[in-house]
Length: 196
Image (cartoon, rainbow, N blue to C red; front, side, top):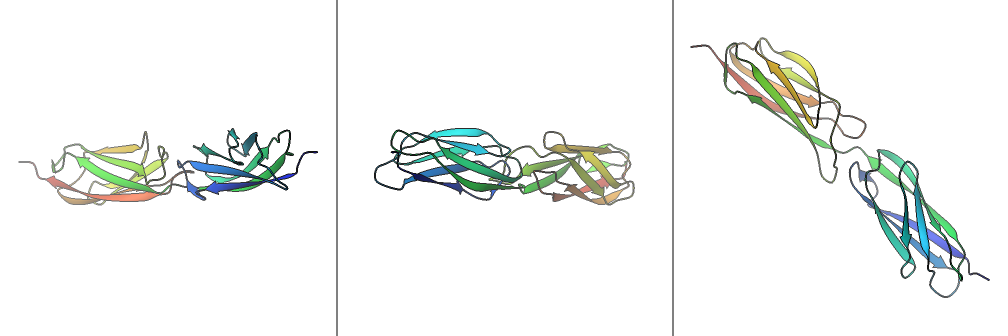
């Protein structure tokens, strides 16, 4: 008769940020003597199904690219000739990744009537990874400036203006965040000189 087992599933680290990989470990404990062999299949809600082979009664797998939210994980031990199958559970929590936003302008300084291009770059903060999406709100604090919402493409958003008045203009780029990435902002200063 096969010996009963208990399967324990651990998650490390937990929680994780979006873009970070997570390691799942299953430990199969026999309710008797000996060491279980065979496979453990990890079934992740909203994620992949991954199989690991026991060594010394444990196995670990690494899972990348889980979406933001809570993911239930089942560790299903298949059993072997001496040990009965068992299942362990746990939950993986994935939270939004922090970001940084930087903004620059070209040319700077510019001359009155010249077109100025503002560029905002949004980058995940490690251990988060991936490419943020959504929009960036540019706030140009000068005559001829204003508030402008631009789409984020491949992590960057741009805005071109030729309406700025003479003087120094504070510039704020505010990334509005998306389902996987948190908002952030960056600042710059644009100088517009009079024409000769």
